[in-house]
Image 1 (cartoon, rainbow, N blue to C red):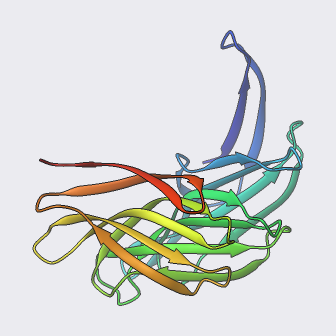
Image 2 (cartoon, helix red, strand yellow):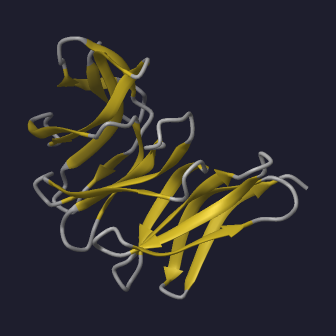
Length: 212
């Protein structure tokens, strides 16, 4: 497998194709992850990948991040992850010039549950910290992250609790990845949280769904 970026114009015609990853033994790639343009007009693309290696009977999925220019020049190319299976969903540029990647990873206890996952990088892509959030045996997946005006982060998604009831879960963390609070929202039926939008630091909108 290889990972490419395709450049098309407004008419849908292919203008260029850039090779981003041609690693040997690249077995599986989930490329539907996050892409962004930073303040330096360079591009950041994250995706989930696995080589021909197994971890406790599963393919060992980790995170790849490629930073490249508008001309397709790769500035750097890094891999991240630990002993769990990490799934990146979103990347944002942070106020300190670095980046925050969020998503979910398999519970460190080693069962089939997932927890919120966050990975903080500096401007050069060096890892500063990575954390899991939520409680053991929660099945939680995050799909959105924003930075507040007070330079904290809000991470949103959903969690399945005992009884298989799905609820919205928002976690607030500081710049060092410490949990400030975590709150569950919902009614007596199933809910999901998908996207956060900050109108200002005191008004945060969350978009999601519920079964009524």
